[in-house]
Image 1: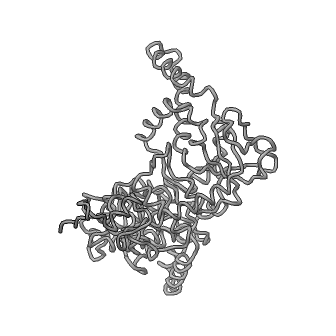
Image 2 (image 1 turned 180 degrees about the horizontal axis):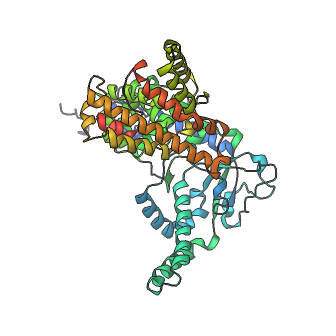
Length: 480
């Protein structure tokens, strides 16, 4: 419909037209009700930023190389170092190494403020090169540890490894004329970077004001205002944030029309069985993070498929069986073998049978000592599984079939290999000098883990999932 003309022959201005002239952007008006909404994490991030800023007590330089062994990495962000990351970080550090004195790239340290020596920290970060060297006072514990909030954990660890590698090259090849050019080139490239040794500008946070939520927030891999978090790491960190906030899958709000990694993370976390599955995986530390099945697209495809719930349920039970072997219940392999020997000759067979079932119930309800389940031990379990039950083995096509004679025979061989490997691993660790660094609970747990494994595996017909192996990420590969 054409606009009507005025007496002067000009087009009349409508109310909307006058509004557009007076307020071009129409910032004060909304055309109807909108459906778009921001992800709830935006507001949560803003709130955590405020909490983190309140916890900052000052800035300083800190010698990360000298104090490397006193830094505790991975508490809030357990993402481990990968070889391809080492190469890219090394090149980045050679080019941008000076950024360690830029407040934007400051390294977060979390410690009790009473540990700090007076006048070794500044509240004004603008001084940069004039910042004092942070010193730890005698009030700190004898073997003090500082939580490093992980943003640059990979860079520091890689730098430490690279510096040590160069020193090793010099020591090993100093008399080898053919390799001297390589050594000189490495030293030349690192000379300017190492001019200030291991010093880095750090933001000091008061440990008394940093809870798990703030800790997870400041540990995200973010640099130069570009978010560097991988999709799978983002999934794990979002899960940990929900856990720290005592939230579950019921608290997840899906954003309509949203796409990409964030939408897939939200969709996964909104499923209660996926939430429970992540709880088992994350409780195992870094072991599952770099398995192929944890790549976000693959994980999303598998867990939202028709058998995703079955995998989550089965792996949860297998992980529980493994945890039953690692607690402070005082049953060793020798004690279990005594019970087994008596059960073959004793007339009181039924009493010994009841005794084993009672011990098994104690193991189920005991609090697991997860620190005792180390990555080297998990690697041993994975290797044993791959050898006996893994893909392309005769048993893999009969997985969990307790009516099949071949599966039962091979499962017995697997069980014996697991118990033997656990016993050897425990003896190796407990006889080494490193035991002084282990908690008493970990030592006690390792002492009895083989006996408990024998009880769980050899008597698995007393529980659900009879003749099923312990959890490893090869199990997921086989099930998928």
